[in-house]
Image 1: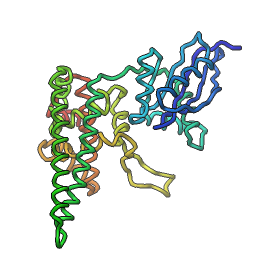
Image 2: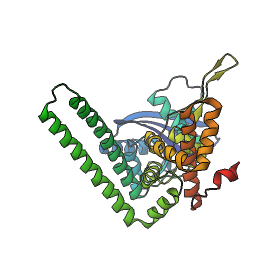
Image 3: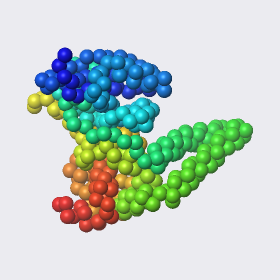
Image 4: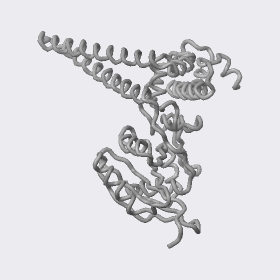
Length: 339
């Protein structure tokens, strides 16, 4: 048999399943996908998966495990592999979806996704993934929990308004609804306190937040969410990749001269990031003349306020990335210098 140069396991991660494909590059530089299987996304399933991989591969060549960053579902496997010394690369979802468009695959299934991930790993030189700082992970859990509480409280407040608008409001119902709102308020307060305590204990995190909050409109909570959702921009290599990860990249539909849809943001990205940038964009437009000028210029061209606001969101995120990478504060002359 020909000598094996590289071995890759492509993993399509779902909530309950790990769909995997094994691929290898041989000494004549040809590649092949040769094994496929589905495992449960549990501790036991991971152990069975690794045993299967060891039996299917050349023990003299390390296996590179490649997967997408899929919300939280990939984390159990990723952390296990990192703890036990396996080589792992985690790729942003948009990279894989863009790569799949270059293939002849017409049907998108869990199997074809795992095959594409394996092929991608064979063709590219990928960086090894290491687990993020514990503080980023904890902040992500806390900020997402807070967001759920805020959403729930908004729903309960709507219930309160509806009950109060009744011809004969039920006093006991009103008391229970108000008690739920008070409880949710106390939970949010607890979470904010936990976030504050975590920041106080981490000087590096304090420095990062200081850089990000130097931008007009960006508060501490926004900075925390951005750092938590990007793991300190760990997988991000450029601004285009970042805006795509957040779903703030612009998509256009055009076919010849007959079909041309309006440009829209893809929204195929991290929802938490987009939500976190909405209010800061409003604040930046209100209080920073340079953001206001940019907003007015865009809106004056097409009359669509939301399009101008999305552009500000995108600019804020890109600037946060730049400040983080350059370890510097926001320069209010930045936009002027870029013209």
